[in-house]
Image 1 (tube, one colour):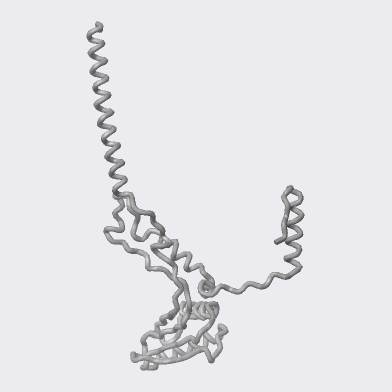
Image 2 (cartoon, helix red, strand yellow):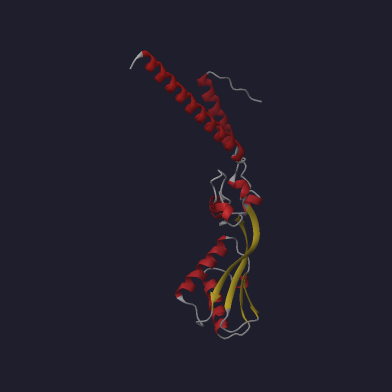
Length: 223
């Protein structure tokens, strides 16, 4: 390759590199502009799905078509009674169909089973509603519990994320789990009172602080 050919090769190579760099720069700039346009505002799952303390009925529906409690139903009713006791018992209401028969027997068995779990008889109320003898027996009590908005909003908008936005239900599962772990929702409304600090405990704590600060070279002042 002579000098003129070498110069021409260098010129063509430089021109090609410059053109490629310009194209790449344009692409990068466009992507940056695009990202700036679609970048969502700060998102917080706790703000989108706040935990609230609500008061309402907790219910258990028991099928009375067999005329007696099945083993699985016995376990469910026993667990329901324990749940009611832990929540701070309010009257448990057993509502059966007015048709009597099978539902009346199931309602009576439910009342006896709940009583065996430690619920006082005067806290068990039995009522009826218009329905056939094999209808559903409803067991319920009023409780305060923590909850958040329902999850599972699987709409088209909620599943399309190519524009770099968050899912509609993002953070909902975490908030629902936190709500389920709140043992005493009433404490969120009225915090439990703390015991007064004993005088000797306070004095010992101050003496320990004075001792530590004297070792470190800092002065401790009493205000």
